[in-house]
Length: 217
Image (cartoon, rainbow, N blue to C red; front, side, top):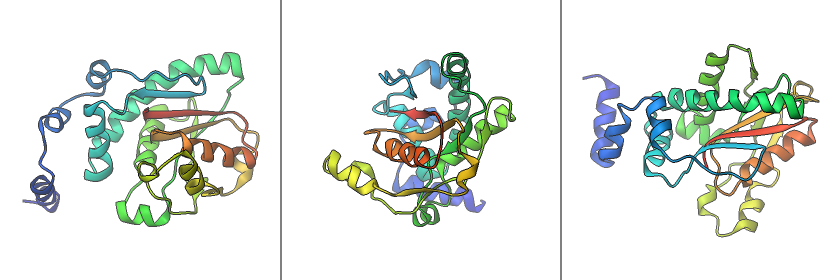
């Protein structure tokens, strides 16, 4: 028995896999997309695929973030990529959204050390492999998180969430995004506070139009 199998078995003892998780282990990207209800979002600059309250989606995101099941990064990337290509046709026609840069929402250094990876960055990397620089350019370590903020779900109200996130991001090498269109990727957006703060930071450093994509809302 290898170390990964031992670790998975240990996790199963603490957090037993339920029926949903066992189902997720065999679902393809196409099956997941067809099976789960899609999110409805009233912002034309945001593409959110699924409703986060769906238990199957919650389990899939949880499996990626906390179990390190990186197959879900591939699944989410395929779903996001297919939907993004459909959307980009309209963006290029009506908003002059040419030559965008794909940027994932970063984790703070301490959160990254704790988790070992950034789930949004993994999804972005998989999307980049699918695209091969034909529709966008993937760049990491452009948007940097310089404050270790508490999870937004723990904040009591909107004001506290905004205060927690204020000035938590900066941009490394601003010349790389100046006057460039940006695709900003996050795994989940609930209140939208993180996305808004990240967008504000990117625009402050000269980014042009920002379009947000997220697995769930």
